Image (cartoon, rainbow, N blue to C red):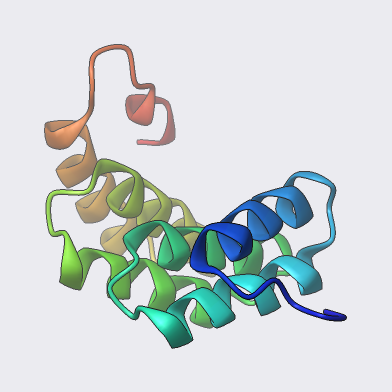
Length: 116
């Protein structure tokens, strides 16, 4: 990432923009820069996990989702994404457990049951 934005807000906007345009390496760099400034940014851990999933770096994705859950154990999105990543690795028992937990945390209308 050339000339990374300096403020946390700028980094968050850049990370989202990179992720939405498919620049996953740029998004990874921006999310890592966010976490270097504030390691408790749950959304940055989630974004990093999504980027790693897109890049098929599943162990790293799982680690990022678990880091988000360590900060916010009741985070539906972290739990659901963890389940999806575990499913992709073939860890079906782990995936089912994470997705069942996500289902219990799901906001109205969330479709996590589709993954079970």
